[in-house]
Every structure is written in structure tokens, then in C-alpha cells.
Length: 196
Picture 1 (cartoon, rainbow, N blue to C red):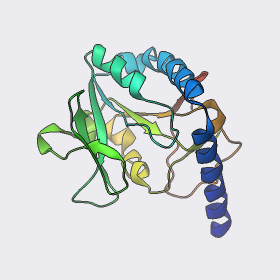
Picture 2 (picture 1 turned 135 degrees about the horizontal axis):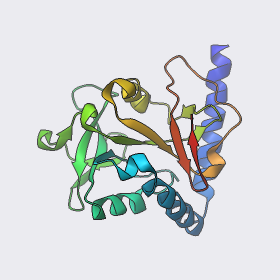
Picture 3 (picture 1 turned 180 degrees about the horizontal axis):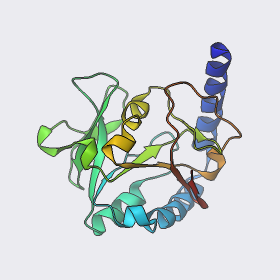
């Protein structure tokens, strides 16, 4: 049964990543603008001060429009970095327009580590979460490294609200779940705010 789930997850990841990477630049921009309109008017976001986001890669819905909007509204933005002291864990560093970005060991751009700009998860109001696929129960499938699963296990305790971001086509009938998977309470796509 476990092997079957792993294989199903692998196939969903590959299919969705292929679909994401095949959309046109124009469609990507349109989708990003539509999602940003829903996102920035969502009440918990409007009331948030500290927002953990991410820089989009691999065809993910573009977060740059939202980040620029948040800066205009004087919200503090934080980006994930790979924790240099605890492998496979994330830390969040404040991000400004002049923040120096460097590639991490996964070749993903992230802010340079500087403890002065770290934020504790319990100080984050909203955490925007990347998604490879999601289902009608709020289950999320990520890249497979477990980085967000590790931090999401604390979300109710630490009081930040995780909000998944995805293209509409990333919705699948069902995600085969593993014991460590954490469903998301909110997922926003260009056409809808999904709540569980």
C-alpha cells in the first residue's frame, strides 16, 4: 500500500510540474494577477503584518505581484531559507527589494542568512505555501522534501495561518496522503478561495 501511494504521488507531481511549466508566460501573468486580487482582499491577509511568502519557481503561480503589493501596504515580507543548522528545515528571513539573494543547495534563490533578519514562526501572521497539487479536502502535495510539512505541523500552536497558492488546474480528485501530511485550511487559486 505504501509503495502504491508513493508511486501515485510521484505521478501526480510529475504531471502537475509538467503542466505548470507548459503554461504560457501570458497565462502565467494573467493567473498571477487574478490570484493576487483575491489574495490581497482576503480579510486575514488585509489584517496581517508579517507575511511569509516564497519566490516562485518551476511554473508555480507567480508571487511577485503579491509581494510588491504587500510592500506598498507596508507589510513585512519573509522568505524561507534552508536552515544551515538543521537540514531539511526552514527558517524565515525578512525580504526587502534590496535583499541580496543567493542560490541554495537546491538551486533556489533565497536571502543570505543573517540572524538579525530572522523571524520566529510565532511572529508570522500568514504563511503562503507553495503547492504542486491539492485536493477537495485541502490536502497539499509539495515537492517531496517535507520542508513545509515540518513547519506546518506547528501552525495552530504558533498561530500563523497557512494559505496555499496554486493554479486552478492543480486541483486533483484525491491526494494519496502520508501520516506526516498536513491539510491546509485555505487554498487560493486565480478563480476561488477554498476553505476547510
